[in-house]
Amino acid sequence: MHRRTHKKSRNGCIPCKRRHMKCDERRPGCVQCEVASQECHYTGSHSQSDVPSRRPIAPNGPTSASTPTVSDGEVQRMPITKSTRVNADLSIAVSPTPFSQDYENFQVNLLHMRLFSHAASGKLFNEILLRDVLDETLNSALACPFLLHGLLAFSALHLSALYAEEKHVWDVQATGLQSTALQLFNASHSFEGDKLRAAFIFSSIIGKHVLARSLLQTDPSFDTLVEGLVEFLKMQLGVKTVIGSQWDVLINSDALRGSSSFRETLTRFQKAAGDPERHELSGDLLPLAAMIDASRLDAESKEEYRSMARKLDICMSSHVIDLPDSVFAWPTMLTQTFVDDLTARRPEALVILANYGVLIHRHRNLWMFGSGGKRLVESICRYLGKRWDETLRFPMSQVQHTD
Image 1: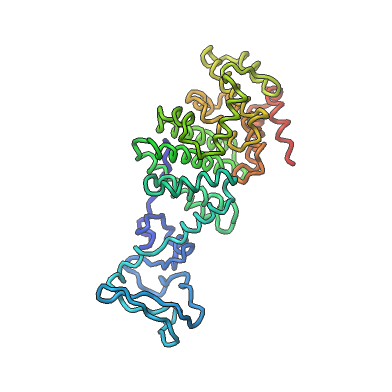
Image 2 (image 1 turned 180 degrees about the horizontal axis):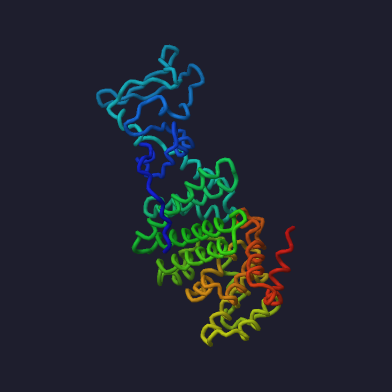
């Protein structure tokens, strides 16, 4: 599977190195530490320029609360009173403890807690899917850490889309956490039982992440947009390959009994399709049949393209199209050959992708899609030129509706 890499920071701050996070080396405090309200300091530097960029939160005056200290191996309580010494930086002074020199190892990562809280807020997924994802993430956090990392990465991507002034911070988190999630997933050599279900939900999250990242780009070029879609399709194929023969077992077993959203999509798809390979193209996608018949594809490739078109037609049927997961159902049925043809910019493959853009456009109210479907269709039409106008009439007519 594709693995995102990044250049290591050799001169990063100590907290970022301990947390294995990419540091931007900004002084007096880096972006990562600033967002996490973390004291930022660098190796061998104790000058005034390395004072933390954000002061610790000051107490709101005298309080009856207490702070634990450690003495002779026992935890004691030290009341905070008016006589408690407060230094010039407004942080409470505490007595040295056996763990003082290693305090950062015991700090809660507030940034990740914010990401999880945002994911649990209901803004990333619909209510049914949210329940599925959160339940599985909490149940599998230790056995399948890739799922938690994937969820936090997707949450960071959403925050980068919401807050322009913090976009860089959240983009860094989204990229780093996604890369870690994929590494952890690839390191999992077998998927059985609960791991199989976690792997399936992970494939759903990572697919949404890669597709959203591509569609949310600002004024992307044609190549950039198509390459992003190809990366998304390869990602879906890659996850399916890693899960291997268990994929078909998974979608037809009780392992998805709690995944209500995908189960409903699958049930509706099967009801609409009957036997997908016997489904006949009709109505809006009928021009695809004529295009395939008139193409210079060999007989085997023509049948493969007809199969892709039939399955897309089913996903766009009235039984399925109103479900957001219909956008992610079709990519799981593609073949490597078709994806390779998209990479090579084969016109027939691009036409089918443009019709897939209509499916994305139908769900433009979701933050992860926005106007991405419209941009995809229009970019393909411009690239192919007037010769393909008639074949692309349907997708072009559909993206004109923006209400």
